[in-house]
Length: 274
Image 1 (tube, rainbow, N blue to C red):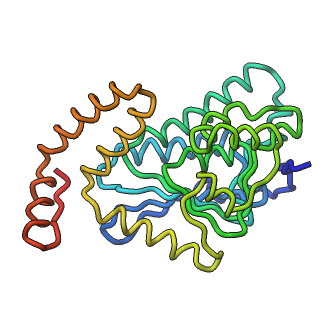
Image 2 (cartoon, helix red, strand yellow):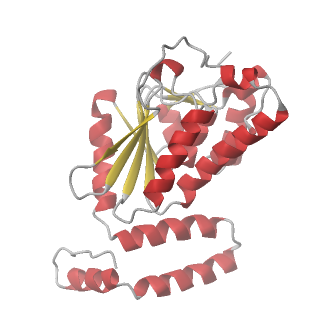
């Protein structure tokens, strides 16, 4: 049965649940690292609260361009903390927990910065949901993914929302209904992640993706992320109408004038973020 036990013994610790590291250069990159490796970085109420606080703060900071969500230890994230869920068996607790988790996933989707998951080890249930909720994902070749709630009688309904928006319908349903793991290469083929690298090359592979994105105009990136997700739920005609309006507005940005001039003059553009 492909269910991960998130009840591993832990010792009391003063270590933060989430470690934030801001880049020392001007790239505007922030790394948020889940920091409960002995619990496989399970998304407890406190972990979700810590992540929400950091994401809300980042979303309001125009100097931050990109966020990496990483994790300490052998696992990326094993989903919700099963011990905590069993200790609080009333309906109100679970309703609040799933609402809290969904809000964090929505924040990732709605914040202006690009968010990249850096995955090692396993990402199961709500951990797989977290990977799916990120805009992009890079994984080591030993990573494995599953929506394994069904193995304990609980269909991964909230993870299904994110997973089904990454994979094709039949591939997503197979993951959800079987609870079986897929490896990193299969996850790449099915669209759950963007790049796979050997563990010792994961940082370099991630950095190459970061470098490409942060070299672009921040106006274009923010505009693009917002537009991309909004048009997904529109019918074709409405999507084109909306996209035309967004593109017209985008054309008025100083960065577009600079970018076109730089292209014509065969030089590198100097972005101002306006």
